[in-house]
Length: 221
Image 1 (cartoon, one colour):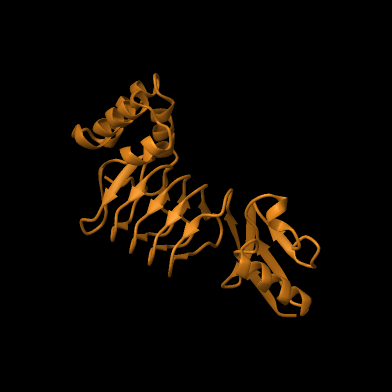
Image 2: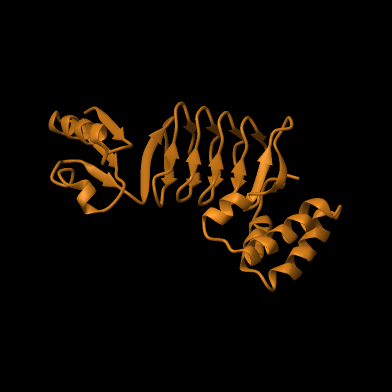
């Protein structure tokens, strides 16, 4: 029996495609966004609706693509998942960006056009990767990366944080953490000690430090 995976099952086109395929006897899995009102008509069809986690077959291996909320992806975006890949809430992957296999992207991550991300990398929440950057290491939360061969940190994503309700005090604490990590000239172990001090007064810095401590790939510096 033929099978299909419809990523936009609650959209106008996706809804009709899923319905037509199911009625023709296909095995259909539809990725749904929104509440029950968006799924009206799909739930009565012989198909599987996935919202939180979509499981698909890629290259013969079971892939788990964890989607708390469907990310926004533009034209010709490619993301590959085999074992542990994940994309967080409200991520934006712009045209021609490529995420190699089993990367983890946090909430509100933005990949500009023509961005490339090396396999197994993590990109922390609220990070912004500028156009054409190639990312070959972990990007901490809040950091802005710009192109210079491989992408390198160029500050924090302050404008994005403001849009998401971060106040001046929180942003200032993140800036202090960024300076300790990237501008102080300290080695990574020394910078982590400084971050631990700053994290006593900032949950956001604590999030940054915990991200670094969980890393398996080199930190982008």
